[in-house]
Image 1 (cartoon, rainbow over the protein chains, first blue to last red):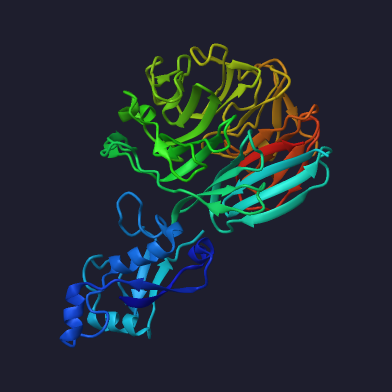
Image 2: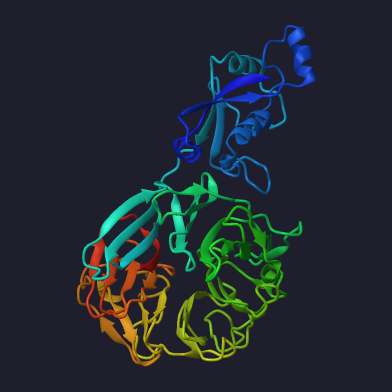
Amino acid sequence: MTSIRVVLPVHLRNLARTGKEVTVTVPTSGADADADADGAGAGAGVTQRAVLDALELAYPVLRGTIRDRQTGKRRAFVRFYACEQDLSNEPPDAPLPAAVAAALAAGTEPFLVVGAMAGG
Amino acid sequence: MTTVRVLAGTRKGAFVLTSDEKREKWSVSGPHFGGWEIYHLKGSPADPDRIYASQNTGWFGQLIQRSDDGGLTWQPVGNDFTYAGGDPGTHLWYDGTAKPWEFKRVWHLEPSKTDPDTVYAGVEDAALFKTTDGGVTWTELTGLRTHPTGPSWQPGAGGLCPHTIILQEPRIYVAISAAGTLRSDDGGETWRVINRGLLSEGIPDPDAEAGHCVHHVEAHPAKPDTLFMQKHWDVMRSDDAGENWHEISGNLPSDFGFPIGVHPHEAQTLYVVPITSDSLHYPPDGALKVWRSRAGGNEWEPLTEGLPQRDCYVNVYRDAMSIDTLDEAGVYFGTTGGQVYVSPDSGDTWAPIVRDLPAVLSVEVQVLP
Protein backbone atom coordinates (compact mmCIF):
# COMPACT_ATOMS: atom_id res chain seq x y z
CA MET A 1 0.00 0.00 0.00
CA THR A 2 1.21 3.47 -0.85
CA SER A 3 -0.07 6.75 0.56
CA ILE A 4 -0.42 9.43 -2.09
CA ARG A 5 -1.34 13.09 -1.70
CA VAL A 6 -4.03 14.30 -4.08
CA VAL A 7 -4.82 17.97 -4.64
CA LEU A 8 -8.40 18.72 -5.65
CA PRO A 9 -9.91 21.72 -7.44
CA VAL A 10 -12.06 23.95 -5.32
CA HIS A 11 -15.43 22.63 -6.50
CA LEU A 12 -14.48 19.07 -5.69
CA ARG A 13 -13.07 20.07 -2.30
CA ASN A 14 -16.41 21.65 -1.49
CA LEU A 15 -18.24 18.61 -2.73
CA ALA A 16 -16.09 16.20 -0.74
CA ARG A 17 -16.13 18.58 2.23
CA THR A 18 -12.42 18.40 2.58
CA GLY A 19 -9.39 20.62 2.30
CA LYS A 20 -7.27 21.37 -0.70
CA GLU A 21 -5.33 18.17 -0.29
CA VAL A 22 -6.28 14.66 0.73
CA THR A 23 -4.18 11.56 1.22
CA VAL A 24 -5.39 8.27 -0.20
CA THR A 25 -4.07 4.78 0.20
CA VAL A 26 -3.32 3.14 -3.11
CA PRO A 27 -2.90 -0.62 -3.21
CA THR A 28 0.26 -1.94 -4.79
CA SER A 29 0.35 -5.15 -6.73
CA GLY A 30 2.63 -8.13 -6.31
CA ALA A 31 4.62 -6.86 -9.24
CA ASP A 32 5.16 -3.64 -7.32
CA ALA A 33 6.49 -5.58 -4.38
CA ASP A 34 8.88 -7.34 -6.72
CA ALA A 35 9.86 -3.99 -8.15
CA ASP A 36 10.59 -2.71 -4.68
CA ALA A 37 12.65 -5.80 -4.00
CA ASP A 38 14.53 -5.15 -7.21
CA GLY A 39 15.28 -1.66 -6.05
CA ALA A 40 12.88 -0.03 -8.52
CA GLY A 41 11.65 2.30 -5.79
CA ALA A 42 8.49 2.86 -3.76
CA GLY A 43 5.35 3.40 -5.76
CA ALA A 44 6.61 1.59 -8.80
CA GLY A 45 3.70 0.21 -10.77
CA VAL A 46 1.14 2.63 -9.41
CA THR A 47 -1.30 3.61 -12.14
CA GLN A 48 -3.50 6.63 -12.70
CA ARG A 49 -6.55 4.39 -12.41
CA ALA A 50 -5.40 3.05 -9.04
CA VAL A 51 -5.00 6.58 -7.68
CA LEU A 52 -8.44 7.64 -8.91
CA ASP A 53 -10.07 4.44 -7.71
CA ALA A 54 -8.61 5.04 -4.27
CA LEU A 55 -9.78 8.64 -4.32
CA GLU A 56 -13.34 7.65 -5.22
CA LEU A 57 -13.29 4.88 -2.63
CA ALA A 58 -12.41 7.39 0.06
CA TYR A 59 -14.79 10.03 -1.29
CA PRO A 60 -17.67 8.31 -3.12
CA VAL A 61 -19.30 11.65 -3.85
CA LEU A 62 -16.56 12.26 -6.41
CA ARG A 63 -17.70 9.36 -8.58
CA GLY A 64 -18.70 10.75 -11.92
CA THR A 65 -17.08 14.13 -11.37
CA ILE A 66 -13.58 13.24 -12.56
CA ARG A 67 -14.31 10.27 -14.79
CA ASP A 68 -17.46 9.85 -16.80
CA ARG A 69 -19.95 7.51 -15.13
CA GLN A 70 -20.77 5.66 -18.31
CA THR A 71 -17.41 5.43 -20.09
CA GLY A 72 -15.00 5.56 -17.18
CA LYS A 73 -12.89 8.01 -19.16
CA ARG A 74 -11.45 11.27 -17.87
CA ARG A 75 -13.98 14.06 -18.23
CA ALA A 76 -12.99 16.37 -21.04
CA PHE A 77 -12.21 19.41 -18.88
CA VAL A 78 -10.37 17.61 -16.11
CA ARG A 79 -6.59 17.21 -16.25
CA PHE A 80 -4.05 15.26 -14.20
CA TYR A 81 -0.56 16.49 -13.34
CA ALA A 82 2.32 15.39 -11.13
CA CYS A 83 5.93 16.49 -10.95
CA GLU A 84 5.18 19.16 -13.56
CA GLN A 85 4.16 16.48 -16.04
CA ASP A 86 0.80 16.36 -17.79
CA LEU A 87 -0.47 12.84 -17.26
CA SER A 88 -3.95 13.51 -18.61
CA ASN A 89 -3.61 11.53 -21.79
CA GLU A 90 -1.51 8.73 -20.42
CA PRO A 91 -3.19 5.31 -20.52
CA PRO A 92 -4.96 4.91 -17.18
CA ASP A 93 -3.61 1.43 -16.63
CA ALA A 94 -0.02 2.20 -17.52
CA PRO A 95 2.39 2.46 -14.58
CA LEU A 96 3.17 6.08 -13.82
CA PRO A 97 6.68 7.16 -14.86
CA ALA A 98 9.18 5.88 -12.31
CA ALA A 99 10.29 9.29 -11.10
CA VAL A 100 6.67 10.41 -10.71
CA ALA A 101 5.69 7.25 -8.87
CA ALA A 102 8.65 7.58 -6.55
CA ALA A 103 7.87 11.21 -5.75
CA LEU A 104 4.20 10.44 -5.13
CA ALA A 105 5.07 7.51 -2.91
CA ALA A 106 7.61 9.55 -0.99
CA GLY A 107 5.04 12.26 -0.49
CA THR A 108 7.29 14.94 -1.88
CA GLU A 109 4.89 15.68 -4.75
CA PRO A 110 1.10 15.46 -4.98
CA PHE A 111 -1.12 14.11 -7.75
CA LEU A 112 -3.00 17.12 -9.08
CA VAL A 113 -6.60 16.96 -10.30
CA VAL A 114 -7.21 20.20 -12.16
CA GLY A 115 -10.25 21.75 -13.76
CA ALA A 116 -9.04 22.82 -17.18
CA MET A 117 -8.97 26.54 -17.72
CA ALA A 118 -11.92 27.81 -19.72
CA GLY A 119 -14.06 30.90 -19.66
CA GLY A 120 -17.52 31.31 -18.23
CA MET B 1 -47.67 32.58 9.52
CA THR B 2 -47.59 31.67 5.86
CA THR B 3 -44.19 31.65 4.23
CA VAL B 4 -43.55 31.91 0.53
CA ARG B 5 -40.34 30.31 -0.66
CA VAL B 6 -38.94 30.84 -4.15
CA LEU B 7 -36.27 28.45 -5.42
CA ALA B 8 -34.11 30.00 -8.12
CA GLY B 9 -31.63 27.98 -10.13
CA THR B 10 -28.98 30.04 -11.91
CA ARG B 11 -25.87 29.68 -14.03
CA LYS B 12 -23.73 30.00 -10.92
CA GLY B 13 -25.65 28.47 -8.07
CA ALA B 14 -29.00 28.16 -6.34
CA PHE B 15 -30.75 30.84 -4.31
CA VAL B 16 -33.62 30.57 -1.85
CA LEU B 17 -35.84 33.65 -1.53
CA THR B 18 -38.36 33.82 1.30
CA SER B 19 -41.13 36.18 2.29
CA ASP B 20 -44.42 36.26 4.11
CA GLU B 21 -47.76 36.16 2.33
CA LYS B 22 -47.59 39.85 1.50
CA ARG B 23 -44.61 39.06 -0.72
CA GLU B 24 -43.15 42.53 -0.31
CA LYS B 25 -40.01 41.99 1.78
CA TRP B 26 -37.69 39.16 0.91
CA SER B 27 -34.66 37.50 2.39
CA VAL B 28 -32.13 35.86 0.11
CA SER B 29 -29.89 32.91 0.90
CA GLY B 30 -27.23 31.60 -1.41
CA PRO B 31 -25.48 30.92 -3.55
CA HIS B 32 -25.80 27.27 -2.75
CA PHE B 33 -23.38 25.25 -4.89
CA GLY B 34 -21.70 28.47 -6.02
CA GLY B 35 -20.14 28.24 -9.45
CA TRP B 36 -22.31 25.31 -10.58
CA GLU B 37 -25.17 25.49 -13.02
CA ILE B 38 -28.43 24.69 -11.30
CA TYR B 39 -30.82 23.81 -14.07
CA HIS B 40 -33.71 23.13 -11.75
CA LEU B 41 -34.64 22.72 -8.12
CA LYS B 42 -38.03 21.83 -6.83
CA GLY B 43 -39.66 20.92 -3.54
CA SER B 44 -41.77 17.88 -2.84
CA PRO B 45 -45.49 18.63 -2.61
CA ALA B 46 -45.69 15.85 -0.02
CA ASP B 47 -42.95 17.33 2.15
CA PRO B 48 -42.11 20.92 1.17
CA ASP B 49 -38.86 20.91 3.14
CA ARG B 50 -37.61 18.11 0.91
CA ILE B 51 -36.00 19.87 -2.05
CA TYR B 52 -34.11 18.36 -4.95
CA ALA B 53 -31.60 20.24 -7.09
CA SER B 54 -29.90 19.41 -10.38
CA GLN B 55 -26.29 20.57 -10.19
CA ASN B 56 -24.02 20.46 -13.22
CA THR B 57 -20.92 21.87 -14.82
CA GLY B 58 -19.12 21.03 -18.02
CA TRP B 59 -16.05 20.31 -15.91
CA PHE B 60 -17.36 17.93 -13.28
CA GLY B 61 -20.62 16.64 -14.66
CA GLN B 62 -23.93 15.97 -12.99
CA LEU B 63 -24.86 15.84 -9.34
CA ILE B 64 -28.19 15.71 -7.57
CA GLN B 65 -28.47 17.48 -4.25
CA ARG B 66 -31.17 16.93 -1.67
CA SER B 67 -32.22 19.10 1.23
CA ASP B 68 -34.39 17.81 4.05
CA ASP B 69 -34.69 21.15 5.81
CA GLY B 70 -36.03 23.55 3.25
CA GLY B 71 -32.72 24.43 1.67
CA LEU B 72 -30.71 25.18 4.80
CA THR B 73 -28.40 22.19 4.32
CA TRP B 74 -27.84 19.88 1.39
CA GLN B 75 -26.37 16.48 0.71
CA PRO B 76 -25.33 15.04 -2.62
CA VAL B 77 -27.24 11.90 -3.53
CA GLY B 78 -27.01 9.64 -6.58
CA ASN B 79 -25.65 10.81 -9.90
CA ASP B 80 -25.61 7.58 -11.89
CA PHE B 81 -27.93 8.08 -14.86
CA THR B 82 -26.85 5.14 -16.94
CA TYR B 83 -29.28 4.28 -19.71
CA ALA B 84 -30.85 0.89 -19.13
CA GLY B 85 -30.31 -2.09 -21.35
CA GLY B 86 -26.80 -1.64 -22.65
CA ASP B 87 -26.62 -0.10 -26.13
CA PRO B 88 -28.95 2.91 -25.94
CA GLY B 89 -29.38 3.21 -29.72
CA THR B 90 -29.25 6.42 -31.69
CA HIS B 91 -31.15 9.62 -32.32
CA LEU B 92 -30.83 12.12 -35.12
CA TRP B 93 -27.94 14.57 -34.93
CA TYR B 94 -27.95 18.12 -36.30
CA ASP B 95 -26.30 17.02 -39.53
CA GLY B 96 -28.84 14.30 -40.14
CA THR B 97 -26.60 11.44 -39.06
CA ALA B 98 -27.44 8.93 -36.35
CA LYS B 99 -25.83 9.73 -33.01
CA PRO B 100 -25.67 7.41 -30.01
CA TRP B 101 -27.70 8.48 -26.99
CA GLU B 102 -25.34 10.08 -24.46
CA PHE B 103 -26.17 11.35 -20.98
CA LYS B 104 -25.32 15.02 -20.51
CA ARG B 105 -27.36 16.61 -17.72
CA VAL B 106 -30.61 16.66 -15.79
CA TRP B 107 -32.90 19.43 -17.01
CA HIS B 108 -35.92 18.97 -14.82
CA LEU B 109 -36.81 17.27 -11.54
CA GLU B 110 -40.44 16.53 -10.80
CA PRO B 111 -41.15 15.21 -7.30
CA SER B 112 -44.15 12.96 -6.77
CA LYS B 113 -47.22 14.64 -5.35
CA THR B 114 -47.56 11.95 -2.68
CA ASP B 115 -44.15 10.46 -1.87
CA PRO B 116 -41.18 12.67 -0.98
CA ASP B 117 -38.74 9.92 -1.93
CA THR B 118 -40.09 9.56 -5.45
CA VAL B 119 -38.86 11.94 -8.13
CA TYR B 120 -38.80 11.88 -11.92
CA ALA B 121 -35.84 13.35 -13.80
CA GLY B 122 -35.83 14.51 -17.40
CA VAL B 123 -32.33 14.06 -18.74
CA GLU B 124 -30.46 15.05 -21.89
CA ASP B 125 -30.18 13.10 -24.20
CA ALA B 126 -33.90 12.60 -23.89
CA ALA B 127 -34.81 10.04 -21.28
CA LEU B 128 -36.86 9.78 -18.13
CA PHE B 129 -35.43 8.44 -14.88
CA LYS B 130 -37.14 7.75 -11.57
CA THR B 131 -35.96 7.41 -8.01
CA THR B 132 -37.98 5.95 -5.18
CA ASP B 133 -35.29 6.27 -2.50
CA GLY B 134 -34.85 9.99 -2.27
CA GLY B 135 -32.42 10.32 -5.14
CA VAL B 136 -29.89 7.72 -4.04
CA THR B 137 -30.50 5.49 -7.06
CA TRP B 138 -32.10 6.30 -10.40
CA THR B 139 -33.70 3.89 -12.83
CA GLU B 140 -34.58 4.70 -16.41
CA LEU B 141 -38.16 4.31 -17.58
CA THR B 142 -37.06 3.04 -20.94
CA GLY B 143 -40.37 3.31 -22.72
CA LEU B 144 -39.79 6.97 -23.48
CA ARG B 145 -36.34 6.73 -25.06
CA THR B 146 -37.22 3.56 -26.93
CA HIS B 147 -40.41 4.98 -28.42
CA PRO B 148 -40.54 4.09 -32.14
CA THR B 149 -40.10 7.75 -33.06
CA GLY B 150 -36.97 8.06 -30.87
CA PRO B 151 -34.43 7.52 -33.65
CA SER B 152 -35.94 10.54 -35.45
CA TRP B 153 -35.66 12.91 -32.50
CA GLN B 154 -33.24 15.74 -33.11
CA PRO B 155 -31.86 18.13 -30.48
CA GLY B 156 -32.96 21.72 -30.38
CA ALA B 157 -30.40 24.47 -29.90
CA GLY B 158 -30.27 23.65 -26.19
CA GLY B 159 -29.88 19.94 -26.67
CA LEU B 160 -32.21 16.94 -26.79
CA CYS B 161 -33.83 17.90 -23.53
CA PRO B 162 -36.95 16.65 -21.76
CA HIS B 163 -37.79 19.86 -19.93
CA THR B 164 -41.43 19.33 -18.99
CA ILE B 165 -42.73 16.58 -16.74
CA ILE B 166 -46.37 16.77 -15.65
CA LEU B 167 -47.46 14.16 -13.13
CA GLN B 168 -51.09 13.11 -13.01
CA GLU B 169 -50.21 9.61 -11.94
CA PRO B 170 -50.55 7.17 -13.47
CA ARG B 171 -50.68 9.64 -16.35
CA ILE B 172 -47.45 11.46 -17.17
CA TYR B 173 -46.77 14.08 -19.82
CA VAL B 174 -43.27 14.80 -21.06
CA ALA B 175 -42.21 17.45 -23.54
CA ILE B 176 -38.90 17.25 -25.36
CA SER B 177 -37.10 19.80 -27.48
CA ALA B 178 -37.15 19.05 -30.36
CA ALA B 179 -39.23 15.89 -30.41
CA GLY B 180 -42.58 17.09 -29.15
CA THR B 181 -44.97 16.04 -26.42
CA LEU B 182 -45.62 12.50 -25.28
CA ARG B 183 -48.10 11.00 -22.86
CA SER B 184 -48.01 7.86 -20.77
CA ASP B 185 -51.16 6.49 -19.21
CA ASP B 186 -49.40 3.71 -17.32
CA GLY B 187 -46.87 5.42 -15.11
CA GLY B 188 -44.21 5.80 -17.76
CA GLU B 189 -44.10 2.26 -19.12
CA THR B 190 -45.47 3.06 -22.57
CA TRP B 191 -45.81 6.34 -24.41
CA ARG B 192 -47.61 7.86 -27.35
CA VAL B 193 -46.84 11.08 -29.14
CA ILE B 194 -49.51 13.77 -28.81
CA ASN B 195 -48.60 16.42 -31.34
CA ARG B 196 -51.63 16.54 -33.64
CA GLY B 197 -52.29 20.13 -34.58
CA LEU B 198 -48.76 21.39 -34.08
CA LEU B 199 -47.36 23.10 -37.15
CA SER B 200 -43.65 23.80 -37.20
CA GLU B 201 -41.72 25.81 -39.72
CA GLY B 202 -39.12 23.51 -41.22
CA ILE B 203 -41.29 20.41 -40.97
CA PRO B 204 -43.09 20.21 -44.28
CA ASP B 205 -45.37 17.37 -43.20
CA PRO B 206 -48.34 18.91 -41.37
CA ASP B 207 -49.03 15.55 -39.77
CA ALA B 208 -45.49 14.96 -38.55
CA GLU B 209 -45.58 12.92 -35.36
CA ALA B 210 -42.23 14.09 -34.04
CA GLY B 211 -39.74 16.89 -34.51
CA HIS B 212 -41.69 19.73 -32.91
CA CYS B 213 -39.72 22.12 -30.73
CA VAL B 214 -41.99 22.36 -27.73
CA HIS B 215 -40.63 24.85 -25.20
CA HIS B 216 -42.91 24.28 -22.23
CA VAL B 217 -46.26 22.74 -21.31
CA GLU B 218 -48.47 23.33 -18.28
CA ALA B 219 -51.69 21.66 -17.20
CA HIS B 220 -54.34 23.29 -15.12
CA PRO B 221 -54.45 21.57 -11.72
CA ALA B 222 -58.24 21.45 -11.64
CA LYS B 223 -58.69 20.60 -15.32
CA PRO B 224 -56.00 18.02 -15.98
CA ASP B 225 -57.01 17.39 -19.58
CA THR B 226 -56.50 21.05 -20.45
CA LEU B 227 -52.93 21.75 -21.48
CA PHE B 228 -51.23 24.94 -22.53
CA MET B 229 -48.06 24.97 -24.60
CA GLN B 230 -45.47 27.54 -25.55
CA LYS B 231 -43.92 26.15 -28.69
CA HIS B 232 -40.84 27.48 -30.48
CA TRP B 233 -43.34 29.58 -32.35
CA ASP B 234 -47.06 29.47 -31.46
CA VAL B 235 -48.94 29.30 -28.19
CA MET B 236 -51.17 26.23 -28.21
CA ARG B 237 -53.98 24.66 -26.22
CA SER B 238 -55.45 21.19 -25.90
CA ASP B 239 -58.65 20.30 -24.09
CA ASP B 240 -58.42 16.57 -24.60
CA ALA B 241 -55.18 15.56 -22.87
CA GLY B 242 -53.07 16.44 -25.86
CA GLU B 243 -54.99 14.50 -28.49
CA ASN B 244 -55.57 17.68 -30.47
CA TRP B 245 -53.95 21.10 -30.25
CA HIS B 246 -55.10 24.45 -31.55
CA GLU B 247 -53.39 27.78 -31.64
CA ILE B 248 -54.29 30.51 -29.13
CA SER B 249 -51.61 33.08 -29.96
CA GLY B 250 -54.28 35.65 -30.86
CA ASN B 251 -53.08 39.23 -30.45
CA LEU B 252 -49.66 38.49 -28.93
CA PRO B 253 -46.94 40.73 -30.42
CA SER B 254 -44.82 37.61 -30.93
CA ASP B 255 -45.76 34.04 -30.28
CA PHE B 256 -42.16 32.97 -29.77
CA GLY B 257 -41.15 32.43 -26.17
CA PHE B 258 -40.21 29.88 -23.57
CA PRO B 259 -42.36 29.74 -20.40
CA ILE B 260 -46.09 29.50 -20.00
CA GLY B 261 -47.93 29.68 -16.70
CA VAL B 262 -51.45 28.80 -15.57
CA HIS B 263 -53.31 30.53 -12.77
CA PRO B 264 -54.04 28.08 -9.94
CA HIS B 265 -57.60 29.24 -9.33
CA GLU B 266 -58.73 30.61 -12.70
CA ALA B 267 -58.76 27.91 -15.33
CA GLN B 268 -58.81 30.38 -18.22
CA THR B 269 -56.01 32.64 -16.97
CA LEU B 270 -52.55 32.08 -18.37
CA TYR B 271 -49.29 33.93 -18.78
CA VAL B 272 -46.56 34.08 -21.41
CA VAL B 273 -43.50 36.24 -21.98
CA PRO B 274 -43.21 36.93 -25.71
CA ILE B 275 -39.70 37.13 -27.13
CA THR B 276 -38.95 38.92 -30.37
CA SER B 277 -38.03 35.90 -32.46
CA ASP B 278 -36.04 32.70 -32.60
CA SER B 279 -32.95 34.69 -33.52
CA LEU B 280 -33.58 37.65 -31.19
CA HIS B 281 -34.03 36.22 -27.71
CA TYR B 282 -35.19 39.41 -26.01
CA PRO B 283 -38.50 41.21 -25.63
CA PRO B 284 -39.90 43.21 -28.54
CA ASP B 285 -38.77 46.84 -28.49
CA GLY B 286 -36.66 46.29 -25.37
CA ALA B 287 -39.78 46.37 -23.18
CA LEU B 288 -40.30 43.46 -20.80
CA LYS B 289 -43.97 42.49 -20.74
CA VAL B 290 -45.79 39.52 -19.35
CA TRP B 291 -48.95 38.89 -21.35
CA ARG B 292 -52.01 37.54 -19.59
CA SER B 293 -55.08 35.97 -21.06
CA ARG B 294 -58.21 35.59 -18.99
CA ALA B 295 -60.05 33.93 -21.83
CA GLY B 296 -58.00 30.77 -22.11
CA GLY B 297 -55.95 32.30 -24.90
CA ASN B 298 -56.40 34.34 -28.08
CA GLU B 299 -57.19 37.54 -26.16
CA TRP B 300 -54.11 38.81 -24.34
CA GLU B 301 -53.28 41.92 -22.33
CA PRO B 302 -49.80 43.25 -21.61
CA LEU B 303 -48.73 43.53 -17.97
CA THR B 304 -46.07 46.18 -17.56
CA GLU B 305 -46.39 47.98 -14.23
CA GLY B 306 -43.08 47.60 -12.43
CA LEU B 307 -41.30 45.94 -15.34
CA PRO B 308 -38.63 47.73 -17.38
CA GLN B 309 -40.15 49.25 -20.50
CA ARG B 310 -36.99 50.43 -22.17
CA ASP B 311 -33.51 49.11 -22.87
CA CYS B 312 -34.34 45.65 -21.55
CA TYR B 313 -32.85 42.78 -23.52
CA VAL B 314 -33.17 39.77 -21.25
CA ASN B 315 -34.76 36.42 -21.91
CA VAL B 316 -36.94 34.25 -19.67
CA TYR B 317 -36.19 30.54 -19.86
CA ARG B 318 -38.76 27.76 -20.02
CA ASP B 319 -38.59 26.69 -16.38
CA ALA B 320 -38.18 30.21 -15.02
CA MET B 321 -41.83 31.04 -14.33
CA SER B 322 -43.93 29.83 -11.42
CA ILE B 323 -47.21 30.77 -9.76
CA ASP B 324 -48.06 30.35 -6.10
CA THR B 325 -51.33 29.04 -4.70
CA LEU B 326 -52.31 31.86 -2.36
CA ASP B 327 -55.83 33.24 -2.76
CA GLU B 328 -54.37 36.24 -4.57
CA ALA B 329 -51.97 34.26 -6.67
CA GLY B 330 -48.40 35.46 -6.97
CA VAL B 331 -46.59 35.17 -10.28
CA TYR B 332 -42.80 34.86 -10.44
CA PHE B 333 -40.26 34.78 -13.19
CA GLY B 334 -36.50 35.02 -13.55
CA THR B 335 -34.45 36.49 -16.36
CA THR B 336 -31.14 35.92 -18.02
CA GLY B 337 -30.17 39.31 -16.57
CA GLY B 338 -30.39 37.90 -13.05
CA GLN B 339 -33.63 39.51 -11.94
CA VAL B 340 -36.39 37.57 -10.22
CA TYR B 341 -39.69 39.43 -10.38
CA VAL B 342 -42.79 38.91 -8.29
CA SER B 343 -46.33 40.02 -8.86
CA PRO B 344 -48.38 39.52 -5.68
CA ASP B 345 -51.60 40.40 -7.49
CA SER B 346 -51.83 37.92 -10.35
CA GLY B 347 -49.77 40.05 -12.70
CA ASP B 348 -51.22 43.52 -12.22
CA THR B 349 -48.06 44.93 -10.63
CA TRP B 350 -44.49 43.70 -10.48
CA ALA B 351 -41.41 44.28 -8.38
CA PRO B 352 -37.93 42.74 -8.42
CA ILE B 353 -37.10 40.43 -5.54
CA VAL B 354 -33.46 40.47 -6.60
CA ARG B 355 -31.79 42.27 -9.47
CA ASP B 356 -28.29 40.93 -9.83
CA LEU B 357 -28.20 37.17 -9.64
CA PRO B 358 -26.46 35.13 -12.33
CA ALA B 359 -28.66 34.27 -15.30
CA VAL B 360 -31.76 32.56 -13.94
CA LEU B 361 -32.48 29.09 -15.33
CA SER B 362 -35.44 28.07 -13.21
CA VAL B 363 -37.93 29.44 -10.71
CA GLU B 364 -40.22 27.40 -8.49
CA VAL B 365 -42.41 28.68 -5.68
CA GLN B 366 -43.70 27.00 -2.55
CA VAL B 367 -46.32 28.16 -0.08
CA LEU B 368 -45.62 26.93 3.44
CA PRO B 369 -48.33 27.04 6.09
